[in-house]
Image (cartoon, rainbow, N blue to C red; front, side, top):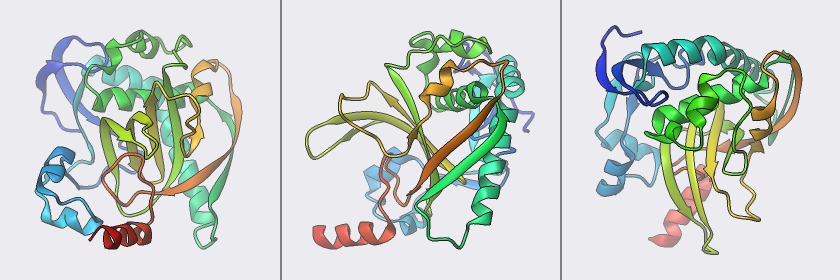
Length: 262
C-alpha cells in the first residue's frame, strides 16, 4: 500500500484527517494490478463511450497499485479492513473458484453454496466501498454509525438496497450515484461497482414495482455478526460492456443499437 497521505474528509467518519489509500475492491479481491481509471463525465463530454474500444482513445489516470483512492482515514481503513474485508475476500475467491469450475458451461446463473459465512461483514464491506466512491453517503441515514459498529444491524433497508451479480464482459465500472431514466419514465438512482468476479449495485429509494437485475442481498444487513451462516444463493450472470451503471447489454446488443441509431 502506498505510504503517501493526503488531508481531506474521511468518507466514513466524516472527519478531516490524513487519508490513506483505500483499494476498491480490496487488494486481495483481485485488485492489485495496474489499471487505467477513466472519468465518466469526461467520456460523456467527449462522446467516447459507445464501445469498449473507446477507452483506448480516452485519457485516464494510471493507478499502479490497483483501483482505489484516498477515501478513508487510517483508523477507519484499519477497522473496516479487520472487521469486513477478510470475509469479503474469502467470498470473492470462492466465487472465482466456482467460475473456474464452470468456465466452459453456457450458464446464465451461478449457484453459490458456502458454509460458515458472515453475511453481515460481507454486506458492510460492500457498503463501505460505496461510501468510498460516494462522498457524503456515510453522513446519511446513520450509515456512519452502522458501519463503525461492527455488530450494528440498524440499517434502513427501505431506503437503500444492494444487489449482486456475476460479472461478464470487457468493462469494469466504479460509478458513484447517477440517474437512469427508463422508457416508461421511471427514475432509478443507483451506484455500481463491477469488477471480476462480481458486480454490486446500490439503489437509493427504489420505485415501487421496479425489480432490478441481480440478487437482492440487503437481507444480509440484519444478520448477527457473531453467528455463522450457510450461504445458498443463485446469482445471475450479467454483462458490463459500457460505462453506464445498470447497462447489462451484450456487445452484440450494443452494436445493434448503434446501427439503429446511425
